[in-house]
Length: 609
Image (tube, rainbow, N blue to C red; front, top):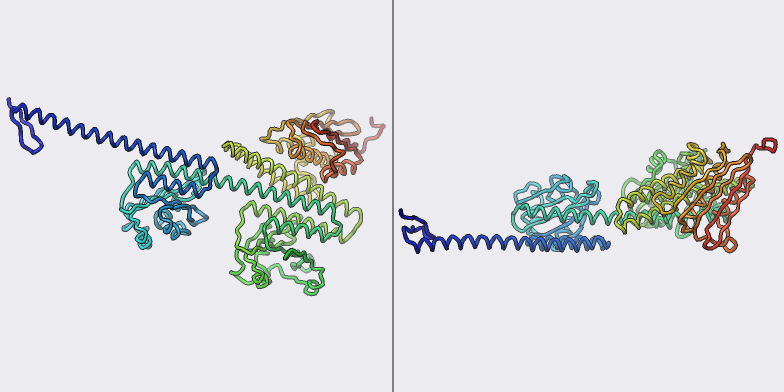
């Protein structure tokens, strides 16, 4: 039987052994060429994977080192462009509802033109991806209706196709977009999509980590600012005899802490229901309405004269006027504009749950405020309100009772906000240390604990202004309140704490329990801030005629004879002595500290024993 084969030219070989052999060799050669081509493809794919892996490793190291975000974003764009030739990478960051410039090293002019675009599900590619929270593929820009109003923009930059992926945080919040644009119409392959997904995840992680670090740093700075402001206020409370000087210290501190141009205070007149100007801090000078020049004017305004005042008094929350040069007119606006003021931050001054005044903080540049900045402003306003209340008390009477009330308020502020802020700072510092060790779980735990302590400190400060005893003592007996305090302040810390209870616990007066709790809080705060102790113990002992509180740490100690008695030690001693008790402290360098408080229990006589 004859053999019939088709050769390369379409001819047939019939019974020709040589032709048959040549045809077999030709087929084998074709198969070999295909295998070589496949092998070349595998080698090229392997090289590309190796290149991507090396690039991702480099960028990951940059993220771990805390390099500038801008540099990380530009490096990510270049990595993709080298991996996918002819592509143009762009990263945009979401700011509110607008996409702002991130990075586009290969076409910066396009980046400048799209900076500030508001996200819209039916606009462009990156804008649509951010608005829809999903990947958007524009295979041909010239026929895509999302681009119908912006074809000139694409034409100017030679863009024919675009693929955009939203950058999502760990909580699925849109952080921005990662886009690839092309000089010819095209659609992504599975390989393209895989590369895009890898890079987008890495970019999102870098943005989220950088923002978390910035937020943590800002929170720590604000907490330190609160502590610094509180220290200045306490010093003025303890030293100043002129009540207006106390207010001046607070307004000066408020202006400095908020980096403001000036500030003013308006208080509600309970008789006329008008808002009366009281104080201002301008050009480094403190001004009071008692000055002859201001007294002649005696400025007063209805609450409705400045619209934000009404909302502020109703909600008891700060109000921001970002640009007073725009919007409706109001009294004093022309004066403020002439001074160069742009933004006003109006903060309610609250006492007994009611807004009794407004502190208006002025800025010479347009400002927006983060929540923690508004919390700082509100805390400073509380200090201002307290200082004004103290000023009023001092003006009304110089009697010893007024002085005692001033000292009580100073002690209560010190024992609430100062201790709370110390706890906040300790936890934020622990969070920063955990972040440097990449322990994200501990970071969240410490930040959450710092927030709880800050909120609790603010609540306690308000209660102190109303002369109420700590809320925890309304809910728990003294022993459990002390245990709860120790647990909250040292959660997540290396300091080991324990509470020892002796004798039969008994009901004590509110005043006595409050003083013991505040003394315990002060000593524990000092141990956390200064002692560098590993152990802290509290002995609460009840007997028939007295109650003892012994607090001990194994820290570095100090020489009480060489160290002047600060406000904290003086406050503890005054608390004990005001109840007819005894206060002592024993310490030496390297041998820890022991604080002992012995208070008599009222109403117990010798015949009762």
